[in-house]
Image 1 (cartoon, rainbow, N blue to C red):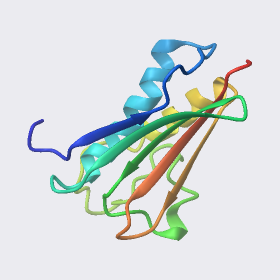
Image 2 (spheres, rainbow, N blue to C red; image 1 turned 60 degrees about the vertical axis):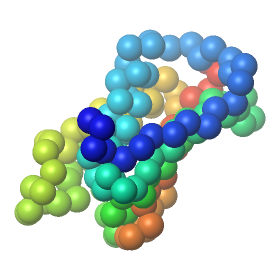
Image 3 (tube, rainbow, N blue to C red; image 1 turned 90 degrees about the horizontal axis):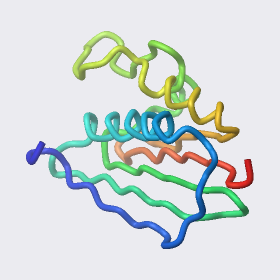
Length: 131
């Protein structure tokens, strides 16, 4: 969608291969990106970063969307949970991030989020490279 926010990338060259199911890992990242894209205004931005850290592949998706209240951060990966529970201002069923978490965990990884209202969100996926 050309009217959506721009997406930039910043990636480390020569990243090692990760053992896992490429389709499922791509699906997990798709859900994270889709969420960021849907919630970030057209004049905002999304950045995707990759790097190695302590034998782990780190993939970060940072957006300038509305952010998530601190008391909701522990709920964002729950099945069917949506931040706009009553308004339904955005499409979806509250499944994407819970699916992403399950896929990442099946690859012995972790997914975390840091966010504040008005300050956007940073989703970090960590996958071991020696699995």
